[in-house]
Image 1 (cartoon, rainbow, N blue to C red):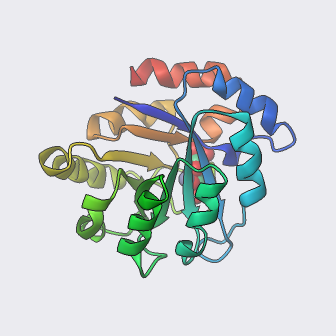
Image 2 (image 1 turned 30 degrees about the vertical axis):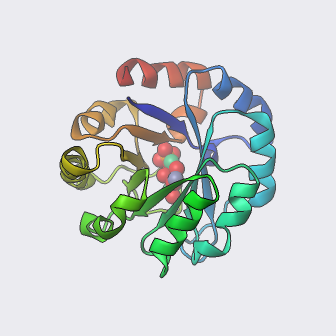
Length: 216
Ligand code: DX5
Ligand code: ZN
């Protein structure tokens, strides 16, 4: 099963509610929430108040991507505010096992993310604890960047491991995903597709329909 996760980072924040209404009716299954702290990544995006409002406006799966140093400080609050999935970065947390266990104990789905330069070996010791591995396909911190093609090999290698030992684990990709490179990412084994600018720039429901047609 493939899942589409529009990233609200690319939304018009002056019209976020209306744009979420469009996403709600579109067939997308997730809403991807890119939380950036200005430390782990250069940008600062948004935090608890936005998550709280988004939760009230959609019943879709809230897929929170924490580009945050020491995310363990915030997972409880984010889950209380309505996060359905919480993905932390392997590069940002020095108590990964405990944090992933805590996310699950609090009733959310734990995910682990790796940056483009981080090998997939970095997630393997923890893969038994997660519902999803996020393979970043751009350097985290900004939307609208160019897809880093070397990540395709990481996705295929991870898909092989997941299919052989952890068949319930999803593989999410995030960054620079467009209609033009979508099929090759699906073929490589990604099944949760984050996309921001390719959805929110232009006609949102038409953009989402085009992704869903290819995703099946
Ligand atoms: C990077 C962000 C972006 C965003 C999607 O830190 O995580 O990847 O979600 O950006 P687009 O789809 O606009 O490249
Ligand atoms: Zn993201």
